[in-house]
Length: 343
Image 1: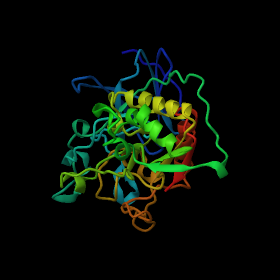
Image 2: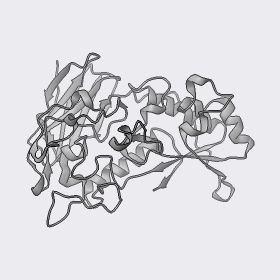
Image 3: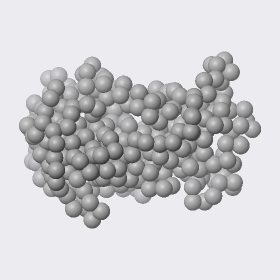
Image 4: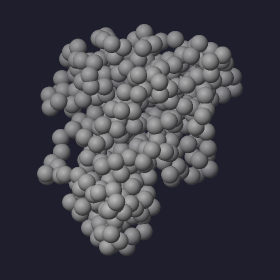
């Protein structure tokens, strides 16, 4: 495979029509491997030898949208000294624009052994976790423009993508509970008949189903457990998870705008789905634990839990602040949403 140096910006996987640039921030890493996956789960690892301004990067010609990928970050695994790098765990790209699959909560997703938390678990997690996906950034917006209703004339309808459309008799069964269902003419007619000028969607950032729910045969309905701040939740797609969810979300926004309805997102940027010190190693924790999370000063093996979720993002770190600002900017400039409600 042909490998070029690429560049450190923009972060994430960026397709330019000829290939894809991959860029990942990690201050603590000694080595980073980009892992590409084929349809059968076969893995190809590529050393990211270029590093500039704490960002590891590489460019791969002819790598196109739909390509599954993840990272393996080599570095210290010393929880009592703030670090939890683990190359045995496939890591989600914090800037992934789409994610495929789900977490199956196998022991391999955890960096410690259940029978002895002080011992490392060297099982590989690739078969048990989500894959990041290269997406096609190009979309026909058809002269889309934000409605920009005056605030004093705004009528906001708070809704859940699945709940709003799941039982509507005018929406075809195959698209109920999806972005396409929300943009169906029957739903748009319902919203306009109520005089709605803006729909506020409960979390659509990629989230996961907590292990305690999965063990009970349940799922995370509300979505306040984000693992991907740039990716629309894949289970709300009617067309697929290899980037199709991005196109379907954009089409939903375009159709709602055409009906003069703004789209506002309910967002949660104060924590991630990785939980506390007993949580899985899914992404941020294995990439640069000390950079992303607030850790207890005199015992950094533990996380400050001011959110009630097990962890709290370290907002004063410039790279975390950049992540949040880049995410907000992406949803406005690339996904054309009109505003946010901060949880």
